[in-house]
Image (cartoon, rainbow, N blue to C red):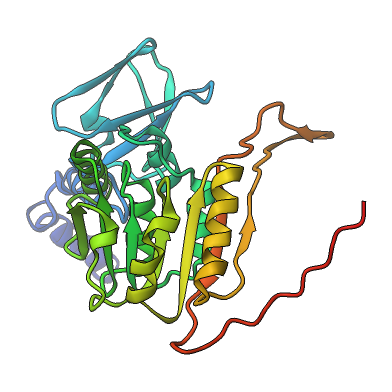
Length: 315
């Protein structure tokens, strides 16, 4: 009997202090810790000051800058900024009318198409090719004219990284202000490695040598002597011109200067496709001609450019 009762007694003795050592509210305490654990920052979570792109069920885009305590009003109800702050990117937030909005940070391409404009922006399809065919990379020194609305400047600054530099010339002060505001808004501040100058690239000092030059201006041929003096041998020059007459004048000016490789000119047409199940067809709208791009490389001093053999086209 005694031996059979001892385990019972032991259990009773251990069970009595248990509420003191492990109080009844312990599970509640554990539950109380969960919200704190959930409140820990999620990698990439939205924070106050973030620019967020909201997409409604019909694909319409809205951009907001998160501010604690504020609301974003849509025709489908209001969205609390506080519901987004701390939420992971890619979340769906609901308006007061229970409409879901997908929340993502805007891509550079999205930002460019929605940014305030002074001059016409260079479209993402062309900016990507300028960076790609211009071989713009980390650590490079890039010279740009003109700055316009800052769209291309964003792509160039991202490409050169913190170790590279971008010098941008803009002749109009109002455009320069727009460009500074757009670039600063995209990066969160005006990058320290961006030298934005009010003036003409024709006045660029020859001793400020660069690795790449991008020209987006009405008469790029007018600054070719300055560009040739500042661009290192082997450096790449990219021209962006809108019309056929500009293209012809610019390319012939490059050939006439005699310090460039044979110019390469092209344009790109962007045609989206509709692909749902077996219904696969081109979209009815496309981004067609925006501009011509021209690349050439700087020859070493004293080098005579080889004459390109041209054959008459047969009609």
